[in-house]
Length: 293
Image 1 (cartoon, rainbow, N blue to C red):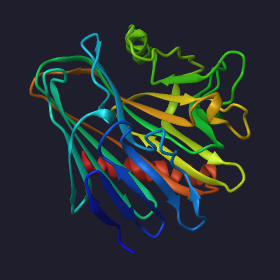
Image 2: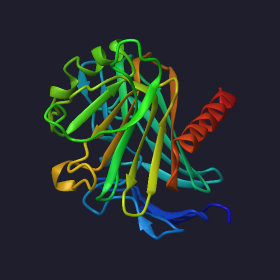
Image 3: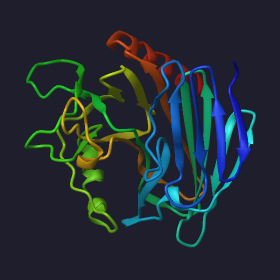
């Protein structure tokens, strides 16, 4: 079946042969909710107290924290490609943001476009996703072993060093931006642990009892860090010990006045994807991304 979007603000429904759910576009904690993997009936998205998947969240730039996008007024409409949500600039937020959500079968592409109305130095947009309880997180990370080449996909399990939140920057330059003081700004400052650089901008959460997975991939050019709430306990993470979250941090660079900058995040909803299949999905994303450049 083709992708179907329906409804009107503040709640828009979608359905494909692989998934169904809705996107809330008003009030606090806007985001994709009640996301269901239709072949199994497993619900991936978090409940009513969290925004679910792929919500634009924290925004930093010019040494300040802008308003959380997921709580801001917006203009939403169903268009041929999917659901488009526009967040117009205002006195406190000197940029326009447009989010376009496009489902195709088990694949969701999230396109983010920033139009700057003043210079935005060290600008960062976070796309946050919170899954239901029991989804264990994995990330593609570079090795810390001397002489070991390439990366590997590993679980992000709690240990005495990681505490609650683990950050995987792209490189040392990205870490310098991430730790320039922005995460000390109120409200809700966060203390991150950095176990390694990411290898591919790729992470997923998998439910152990069913094998249902949400595989997330960041823009190969514009993703500069991945944040993950660690698995606690490892095999069956409990939301009371840390959100079941994956955060993609986009841009991490200067965006000049009048510049238009865009980035994309892709989610694949599947079951028991092997590492070979995960890498094949990444290659498809990369090929598609290069075809759009």
